[in-house]
Length: 274
Ligand SMILES: C[S@@+](CC[C@H](N)C(=O)[O-])C[C@H]1O[C@@H](n2cnc3c(N)ncnc32)[C@H](O)[C@@H]1O
Image (tube, rainbow, N blue to C red; front, side, top):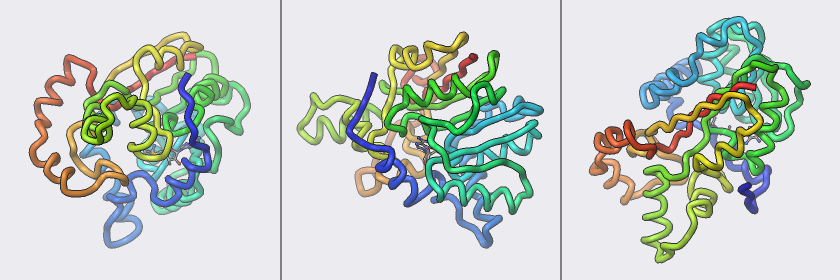
């Protein structure tokens, strides 16, 4: 199983500087900031709602791991779950999500916590949701074990992690492998050092099967993301002239078309049942 040299502290330091999606949170008031962030998110990534199926959380005990700015968390809260808990590694994300929930008068129990060692009893939840989080934690295998532990038998988890053999992986290899005169550099090393927080991982189908082997039902989908098509802000680490050119000339429609038939998207959408 994958391991790397980065610690939980490295990951936390990265996300504490700037929460995911914060770049879209601009408006004339704090309430507008949150509204605009959510609007931009679902415009750019309409597939989140299709995958998450937020209305399905009604009347369930739900945990979200890695709430970030709290957009998806508020979508879950709006569907009247029986109970809702949200955790994140960084105080910044928890504080932002608390602020959002207070402004929109939504309810959730929000705490700083670690996906690798959750502070919940076994069999606590009917559903666990986690978008773009577990691949950032140094021990992603442990995170999946924790999801299994806190889910009740028959409970469902919906998790997005990164898919390795994606168009984003290829572009990163072009930039940090081939064009850096290191064509033999591994994709694992490139993802760990050049995509978002230090030590970020991306998975093949075989590796994802290994992560989810304790679950009874497993469903995988690969989704072409906004990162694969250079739309929106592609991440805190990537800016500059080459990126501007790529944004204008990259064959977005072609990538999306191919992605319907061949798994080339960055987002690995995993639905698992305990
Ligand atoms: C890319 S952001 C995603 C946030 C949110 N789900 C979204 O889609 O906007 C990754 C988040 O994962 C959190 N995170 C990383 N490792 C974690 C861990 N071990 N436990 C809890 N949260 C973690 C980070 O603090 C960060 O807020």
